Length: 430
Ligand SMILES: [Zn+2]
Image 1 (tube, rainbow, N blue to C red):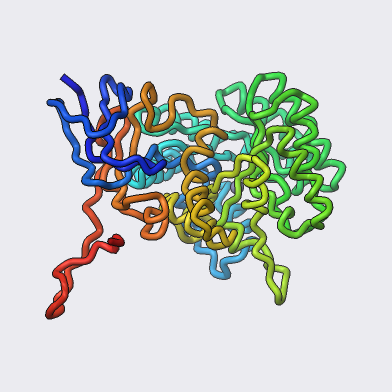
Image 2: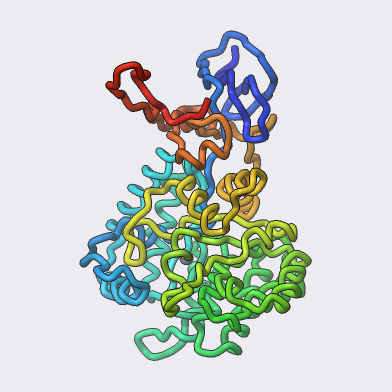
């Protein structure tokens, strides 16, 4: 007998009346209108069955620290940085693990089953690295967690307690301990040339170890911050095509159009992907402007049109920099769609892909998707297509991992008492 049969599903590509047959945690088949006895049958009721959401950019060492030791009163980046500095000496292993696990609970409930998190390695204790390696081990049955060695204070800029710039040693140690991806923050190094040197050094480290690279790159409104060019060049030089990602890339918003007309093809050639973080980019960038105020998000539709893989990341949830968020990647896609003015039909669908299959590709997830042979990981959404899912930030009716329901939410239905009108509304169209 079939372990799990999901029937009457709609898929992201528009196929309808689909049945998904699951055995031993794997999709055995995806066929139209099939029915048969199964140990468990779920009628999707014509709703969208999507592969799980994937967040390609997050900071799990800081998440849910809102209010510790105090809240960010002004809501600015500067107060956020000061606040992180106040919090860092008081972090404990247990508290880091507990907050991260609590966030993973939220993520699972929202159908977010894979997260790439940056972890601050500018700490001689490497406390957050140890804590998140423990979290990675504990959540493995239900969530794929990737750790990026992130030198928050700069690989050349940060000094240890003896005044030495030893961040590269800590980064290497974090990789030896089991972190997955090499991070960086070239625009935060002291000079442009030190930033470029850091890109080269870190890409070489990753190439030597056969690892992927994901750098916070050009997260500034300065149009002359051009580390993405160096990152793309090094990717090509080291033969790392398809394994390197530039996160944020907000300077591209403000760059000269002629320069960008050269840069985007270089990124395409190098197989470098991009992650924009719309919730954070729209709140942090353009803060030095009066009016007009720049939006600051990177050139998402232009990069997509050129064939560059672009994902949307959540970046922060209830931490020193951002007081909001809940692990809802549809909220992220919703904001990205608005900030990038991606209101065309294909563009809206691309925003859904930017929180599902594209970040899955960037993370290098294997057997991801609602296809024969893939892992039986899905989300049943209270929506009939991806655009409706973004519009309503659709309820995750059921979240399934390896063929087992691991989270469920009651449908979003309101009761109304108006004469001559229906008794309920569910915000679905037609
Ligand atoms: Zn970040």
